[in-house]
Length: 201
Figure 1 (tube, rainbow, N blue to C red):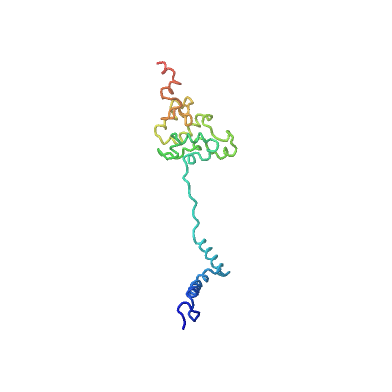
Figure 2 (spheres, one colour):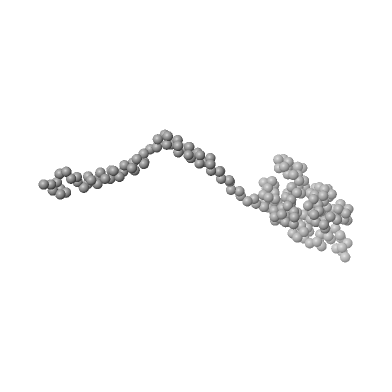
């Protein structure tokens, strides 16, 4: 008779039985992990390429423009200090925020087209209001300020007849008074710098 679990009869040992069962379980895993054929790879590549063509290319993230770029983007490289100061002044704020109905107070509004100057960097290739004739300066300023009814009479006023211009009293880049961009600290000091008889009185 055969002895249970210890003989050498027809019943397999437990270790052998478990080994056979484990091998059978590995067959599907081995099959799944088998290397792809050339045809399979071609199919995968074609599918990936189709997916790339179908998906739209992502748009680059647009960075918001700074005030300096809006107002004087062409001038920043050489005149950074002036541009950075200008954006905090009356005309610069009007250009950046579109306040008071003015949206053209950029550097080129007063200095003209800067394309030629950017290429040559010559002072002769850009308008410089302090070196312009009074009538040319006034015409330039009234391009925007003629929208203000109080400025329309300047062309016939006494100051205009005596050869004065807007920048005789006002300065954009070198103002001493931030309220009206005056070249002097106060209106009284400004007026009496010419009207000496008033100062003496």
